[in-house]
Structures are given as structure tokens and as C-alpha cells.
Length: 569
Length: 44
Image (cartoon, rainbow over all chains, first blue to last red; front, side, top):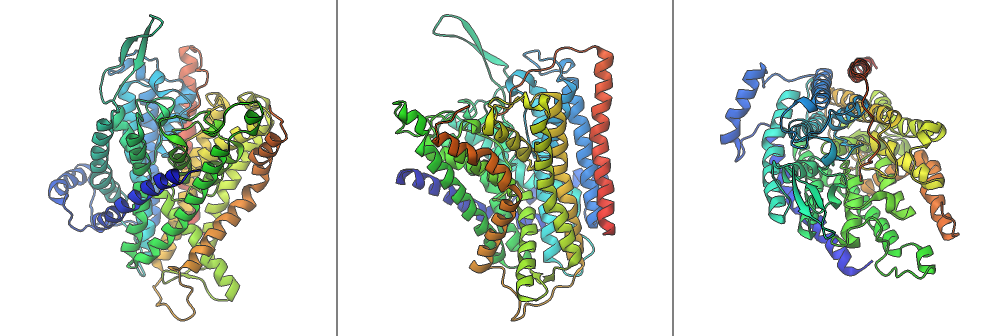
């Protein structure tokens, strides 16, 4: 690790917070229906959408109506995307003549993009036509991100309002998230990516003559536009198979920094939006502090592990002064590669500029644990905020148990019903991750997909299900996941990880919204100070540790010790 | 990196159609079950 490396990390994170502050305030005004500088242009467009869809923007919904609207909308999105991929061969904008996507892969991919996971058990540039990429996958990138933001807003309103029966209007929130936030940001960031050298074209490929004198077709396409929403919406699904390691998706240090910045921006901004809307900015900053302390710590673990490199290679006489460079791009360096690894798994992005399967054991443990902690550091757009709020409720509950007082969060008493629903949400994650991983670790046809035997093979399987349930989408890509078993089980894991988690969270929001706000008293546990942040971090780590330490001990931890004992597989 | 696996070889059209129905049912059924789960949470 070097000082310059840490300065690079600090520069990027500082730029994220600097951009997130005004964006967070802007989003608060947008979602509260206030006038913004884009209102003059976008309000008429908004009204056209509502009019065409028969939506009454002033009519708000209960938590149940909101959740059901979301499920219907995303269900329809799944059906459309599945159909588009299955009929790809007959549709236009398929310059390389790709065949229709197979049914199991289409199922997995449709679920994947609708749930904001963007798990890709295929190579984008060799499987999907431009039409599917643009009209299917990229559209879902916007809609899934807008869905997450909508839920975060609904949960925020639950705490901002007193004795309320409604949480907003799902259709209005979706429309505003897409029109006022994601589209304008994507336009700016896509142009910025293009300026760094990322291609944006409808051409299928460019033919070049190699040094050996043979012809090679290098895939091209509308990469910059897909890259922008891929990062801003914490989607992660790249145009190319190697994602942001590809020189067309991420050509240089500037594009790399822009990639990390845009990935962290909206999730970070939503904490400021939360603080603004509940009327106490320090509340949002407390959540942000907890997120970033753990994010920076994880970055440090990856950075240290990767710069320490493999002792077996050192003993074999290989020069390891650059650290572990397997799976890394020299143009990015160790520091920003480590930040990318931590950011993409702390968020639920899943974009990669480093091959996670090539990380050192402890370097791979960090992203695995970040996903297993619930994708809340800072988490996906929207999902990170509401996920963190659920853990905050658990934290105040534990604090309340310790001192024998009814727990309160932001003036709302947290009672038995809210805790039951919080447990439904929180316990679902380890059940799904460990349950599916255990099944795959026992079934011979699932084990065949591993690229490595021993503990690293277990890590590949555990990572896949952690990624799917957490809606991350990155992979230890030694695992061959394009098999019926993984396509189906990962699809189910993604669906449940997204929506089976958010349903009880919405129920919590409904229950909390209906409560009356009580003023803070001398006995109220303050949730905007260092003590709360420290307790919140402890609860996150203890919860994650209790749930996942045994599995991690059998995977990356034992692999680390075996490596030092010169045992390879 | 995204996993790159072996793509399935061509299947007869009728089998392909049956698989489409199975996966569409699986996905739609999943969303329907989630809707039922939401209504269950409302009663908690």
C-alpha cells in the first residue's frame, strides 16, 4: 500500500460526497413535488405520462398498494424482457446475427435485470443484439434503479410523516426517479464516458488485421450509454464479458475514476435526501458515516491483501513488488482496483474492473462479506438506504433492550410488529444464501461448474449465491453458471433477494407511517451521534459474522491458511 | 467478470416452446407468490 494509492482513494470518495450533497438535496425537492430547475422542461412530459397511463398523481397509495403496483410492474418487465431475448433472432438491430437466447438463460437474465442484479451468465458482445441491449437490458437498468429509489422514498416518507396512511404514489415516484434523476444524469455521464474514449456506435464490429496477419472482428456498440446507467443505477451489467476491465468499457484512469464515482453517487446522495426529508440532516449523515467507515475498511483489506501478493510466487522467485496482478489491469493500479472491488460489492453494483476470482483469499473475503452484510455499504440505489434503515431499527431495538426503554427511531416507537417484519427481512438473506450454497455444494452436477477444487471452489459457489441474493451480479467467474441448475436457482435467488426482502420492509414502512411522532425526551437514544454510528457498525458486523462466519471459515479463511502452508489446488 | 459458460445446443421447437411455458410460469408464479406474501405481511 502506498500514500499515493490512499490519496487516489480519498480523492474519488471525496468527489463522490461532494457530488452527492447537492444531488441529495435536489432529489428531496423532486420527490416532494417542489419546483426544480428541470421542472419547466419535464413537468409537461410528466403530465403526458400520467395522462396516457390514467394515473392521478395526487392520489397516494398505502404500503400494500405501493408494493403490489411494484410487483405487477416488474412482473410485466420480466415477461417483456424474456420475450425480447427469446425472439432476438427475428428482430432488427442484430448486425452480428445472434441466435435467440436459450430459455433458461433468458429466464435468468430477465430476472437478473428486473431485480437490478445484472448477473450475466453470458458474454454480452457475443450473445445479445443491439436491440436487446438497448430496448431490453438498458431500459430495465433504468426501471430497476427507479424501483429501488421509489422504495427508499416510501420508507423515508414513513419516518417523515406522522399518523399517515399513505406512502406516496409508486407510478409518480418511478416517473420522477427516471425523468428527473436517472435520465439527465445518464446523459451527462454517457457524454463524459464518450469523452474518455468509450465507444458509442450502432456498428456491430470493426475488423482489424492482427500482428500475425489474420483478420479479427472486435465487437463494438452503444457502450458509453449503457455504461452510464450501468454505474449510476448500480446495475453492473456490462456490454462486454469482462465488464469494466475491457479497454472499450474502461479505457483509462479517467474513465475508471468516473466509473467508481458514478457507481457510488446516487446511493450516497440518497442518505442526504433521507436527512433532508425527515427534517434532520444529521440522521442521514449518521447512516452515511456507518456505510463509509465499513466501505473504507473493506477497501483497506483488499488493498493490503492484493499488495501483499502470493507468498508462493515469491518463493518461486517471481517479482511480486507490484503485488498480485493476476486478473488486474495495469492501467488502473492496485489502489483504485481495490476501491472498485469494495465499492461494487458494498453497493449492489457488480461491475468489475478486476477479476474477483483472481483475488487473494482475504482480498476475496472482503467483497464476499460486503455482499453478505446485506448490500448496505452504501448499497444499491434505494435498496442500500432502506436496508440500512432496517438495521438501524434493529440497532435502536437492541439499545432499547439494554436500557429497558421502548425503542424509538426518528420519533416513531418501534414495537413488536416492526421487529417481526424486520426479522423476516433480515433472516431471509442468510437462509437463501446458505441454503442454496449448501445444496450446490452437495449436488454433483452443481459441483461440476467449479473452476477450482477445495475451499476456493466453495468460495465460488458461496459468492454466486451471495451475489444473486444481494442483487449484486458480480461473480467469481471461474464458476460456469450458464447451466440449467445455476440459471434456475440463481434466478430464484435474485427474485427472492430483491422482492421477498422489500415486501416486509414496505410493511414496516406502512406500520411506522401510521404511528404518531413523539417528541424526543431525555431518555431517547440519539441516533445522530458517534455512539449510534458505532453501535450500528457493531450490529452490522455481529449480524454478518454470526450468520456467515462458519461458511467463510470453510472458504476464503481456510484458503488463506492453506496458501501459507504451500497447499494449492 | 461475468461467467461464460457453454451455451445450450439447438433444441427441437416443441421442446423449446414447452421450456418457454415453464420459465414464464416460474417467473410469473414467483411474482404472484410475492404478491400473496405481501398480503400475508399485511395481516401480521
